[in-house]
Length: 352
Image 1 (tube, one colour):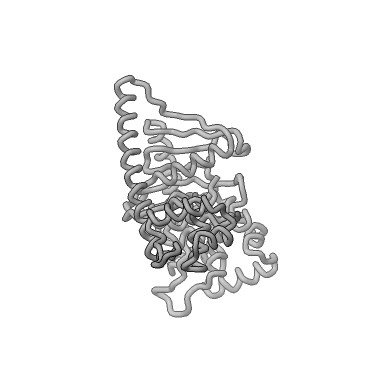
Image 2 (cartoon, one colour):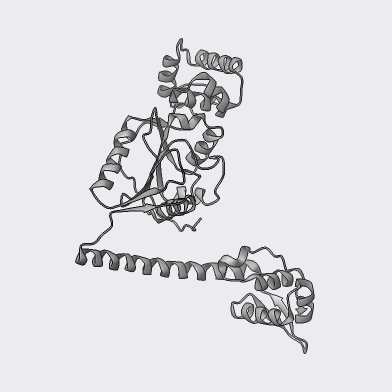
């Protein structure tokens, strides 16, 4: 039996989902018909129907022969989703109580581990996601190559996570030399990520709500492991380092409107070009990132400078900033509260 397991997250096993889907295709089917169409043994179909009835997904049709009809999915499944959400909220409350219990125990015994060592690529990746998901107000990220996997890989959860929790990401200039990285940063900005870039980011790091951080033991070897740092002077020092670098970095923005200058908005292509010029990348790296040749790049830079009335790239950058083309104005460093919203437990767009 091969079946889509989408409904597993709301508590349906493989047989139950197969039976429910079969009923959606053929309402009023009997147990025998369902066993034949799904390839599930009759006894398992009977058990699945009983469970589906109990969960409000199936009802019995009138008549002597037992036939079953599905409750419309928009009603039945929404009820399961709400029930699962309530269960998860209850688990979250218990987790908070257990965490408080652990802190109290550590305070009594004087044994608290301020630093953990996590080994193995999978374990590091899982802890990275655990830390990001645990954030309620702000995530701080230092991002730089090399990456453990292709940064163009997408993660469905990222949009919801970035929309619910304020993300501030500081990119190493070399990050924009990686093919596809600019598109990833653009997408992140579209869902609320605040980004800046600097010539050199000294390490990779993620910090959640200034209470826990993760940083790799080695930049070059992903299998070496990572450090998890809990509330301590060390964590304070790491967040202070982030703020110092953030204050020195160049804002990365994707707005192209001209509030004080007549004329059309800046195109996405020209804005990407301005952004990459602002990072200080060499022409070869910019051309690779944009997927164009050096001659085409030279023509586009010349046309952009002409439109800005600039004779040098430096003047072009100043004029673009004046017009609001080169990104948002720098904000004061520090956490910015965001309205919370429900989030599922799925990663980020590949920072590891």
